[in-house]
Length: 507
Image (tube, rainbow, N blue to C red; front, side, top):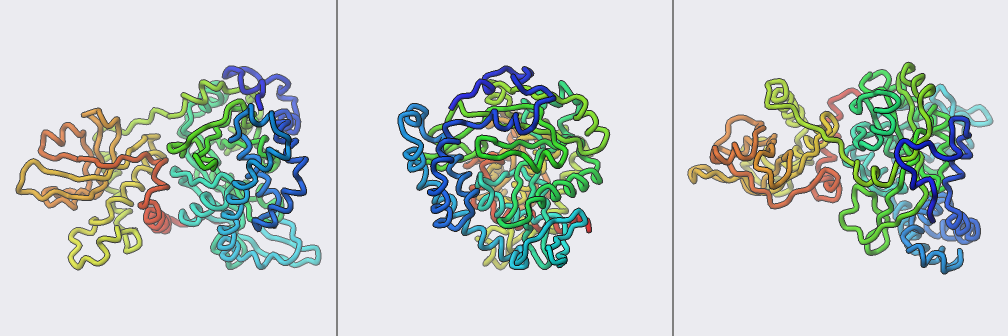
């Protein structure tokens, strides 16, 4: 399961993949022969097992492909294709059955019962059947809570991206869930910046956006995915905040990237893929690999693609981009952008106070910690809202400043015994836990009777000298937070914050 392409150094052109190489040829050079043999010889079993799990054959096949690398290479080569299929069949059935459970909700709220005929998607945002019936479609934003369901329960990776900050989809009439879904995050991988932005396009990483999840409900017209991308790119162009859109697809999993090709994306690199698995054999993404037991190596790489959002940048893409290979070393170690927060100047402090105002408007019984729901005298409005507010702020700082904030749960203690401590409190910190000069940002510090301002932003050692000691019992990164109990309440908060902003729609 090893490919020559995965071992080439960064910036090295891929053999057999110059600009004249067809998209199809590049894709098929990155397929794994052993996996293709397993899939080919197991087609009938895949069909039967997909029916058992209640999903389409392609959904089940992806889970088979995704979990084959969990088998050690030597063991793979000592078994027949049929035996390899049996090794991953149970986990593929389990994963697919869980996807089916999520689909029951999504199809109901997306109103897919309207799709009783064979439709073709039209550029005018409508579906048209062979007998002339038309269904109008709507393109618009997707609520964070709905997006979480699509990422965690429907997408083949079955993992939520904590840094998602733009989500779009296409809706049927009356649907509250989309039939197509696209999620976007800020670009935070330096190996991408080094291989593309710095060397070819000279685009600041702050102006680069990554399409991290793309999904369509089963049975929708095939060209709806590319239509979704078209309208998403149009919305991004209107915002004028980003100039480059990046995404990746995995040929080893059977993806061809056809929708990306139809939407004007161009390959610019092949990059190693990290396959991590839990003790039970479930695949987990590299961002969520904290509890994994093993990982696979030597698998074929992903294809990284790029598209200019504005016409000028798209011309630069067409003129400048060549397919190179990202080294295993760069992929493993160049994984974090060194983002830095502004100093404690008035502009940034004003921004923090504006964040607090936005959050206050979104606080509700759905976002408060459950232990405060039955309390008659809750005190300041921020009490019980510190957890969700800290998560929201950590994500916002990742988006705006590429800053990696740590979510902290613990106590705020005062050296002056006359001041009551704030127990079971949440805040965020920027910097290493063992660095006394790390920054503390507490966006609900008015829970403390001794503090007047609603927002605090100061170095930890300075606070200690002033008699304030933030003592964390638990520290979580943003990528670890989707598995924490606070996340569901955070989604309710994020839904409410987003409702303050007009939805971007086109008709």
